[in-house]
Image (tube, rainbow, N blue to C red; front, side, top):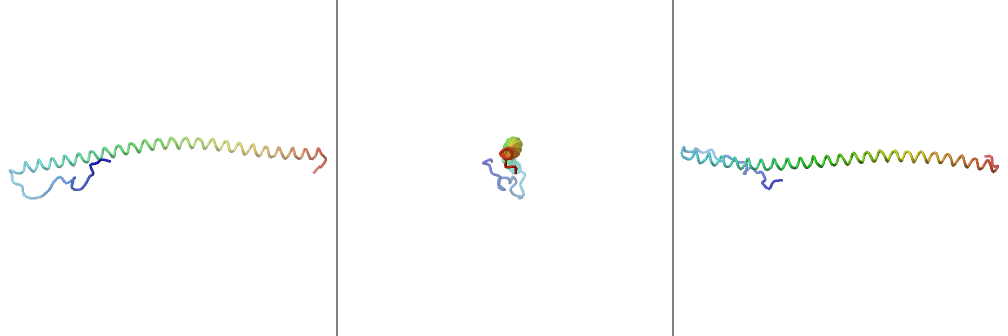
Length: 111
């Protein structure tokens, strides 16, 4: 953020409600204009800093969304692989049981 922190004192452009003589009016108007210009510069600097921060957050959000999309894709692939391994394990277990029964029948146990 900008080093130019906004404070009430820095944003105060009009100081005083005293009567101003015609001769001093130009001087007071110049003082007010300078104060207003300073306040505008502070506001502009802070707004520019906020814009930079928002842009940085948007960039970070895009990167995060891309990473999350890749993670989701990987999780989908991982789930498919786990399902394949579970199915293979179930099929292999059934095959082992059938082979075991066949061996027992062949040996004459018959149970």
